[in-house]
Image (cartoon, rainbow, N blue to C red):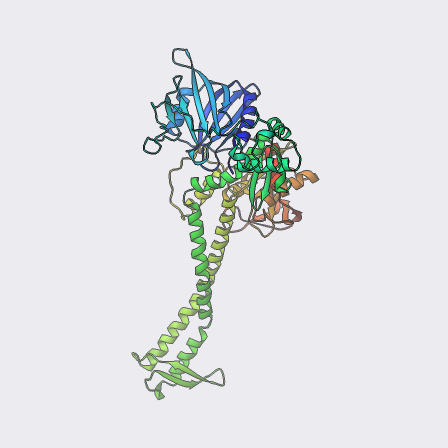
Length: 553
């Protein structure tokens, strides 16, 4: 579900607490997502504005985002027009899903001017429009020509017109319950009400709660409540009691991160990692189909002795045999007769030689097929591991997985819009500072290889799920207390194939107990002596760990 006007009202109210603020940086996360670095009275803050058709929103964020190396033309314009400016006011247009950001900037001569940004958070029509002091559009994230919308032109040089409102609706904060029509849904009567919020307010009023009290709770709320119903997350700034399930409660801005970050990362990974998913699934399909054929060929090769016996019998009886489609002869090795097919193009000695050749060929094939089977099984395990890693990957993680596949010859290099570090490339390691102890999290093979072979010391502890593909976790305290031990194990369990299971076994041991598997993919190791702890992966706990302990680059 998307934001409604009342939830946006609360977000806007909280954003105004950070004003005035200076715009110090504007970056692209994607073509429709912008990350703003702001200098506020409370310190530096990151503002996320998304105009994605599904995930459109605006809020402060603590999440780590990878930005595009080459900003879009619109972002270049925003930098030119707004960089160094001050956001003076953020106002909502009524209770519509439109925010007006008033930004004070100085021109090249030092004169002050007021620019206006309209953030229209209206589903598939979401847009960001820059307007001058005369309400003339300077440019927009998504230009809308007249042939697409004859009533509302969004194009440089056109006069900005607000989205149309349903004037039959009323302000929910300025009426009382007696003015509501009980026969109509609240969403059709009141500004800012989504159908979900309308059902909640109707339910509460039916249970005897006063309309004015409900609206006061909404006005005062700085909390986001997330309800999971049939694998769908429903949310608002008051508990949705009509859903009859216990919500997860977050401070408003943190809740927006918890709600959207992971979902959007999955979409972003698919967009930014090119044909990564396609290649992994193609290789898995190819090798899974190939493996049964190799086993069948090996079974045939293991039966090669019968061809040697055919040759022996044909040579022994060649003088008494006539050329015919098949001959039946007594076996030298068993008390039974054997029927031998004869190739009518050749005489009996030539048929015997052909069977000897086939025997030697099948015998040589045994070792080759066994090697191919081992390689095929290893390849399947490798791509199953990559598939699991991609499911858990952030954008930098996915880009590194793609680089690994390029190095191994499965993919061709391509130009990427993702910002990469210059100089020697060090894998993107997630780092936590837990009471002065550093904990490292590796979520792909390149990161895991770097962690275990380069970064970790021999006395550091290594964590990994038992018999499941997953992340490597390094704890730099060789003797952690119970809390630190469980945090490391929780990270290993959550970032694994066992994320949605319970009682996930996590093995841990000193790094010195690890041995690299010869000839294997990067990061593959075996353990000699280890202990096991069982964990129930929890998204809420991991989110809290990330917010509290993750070091920001």
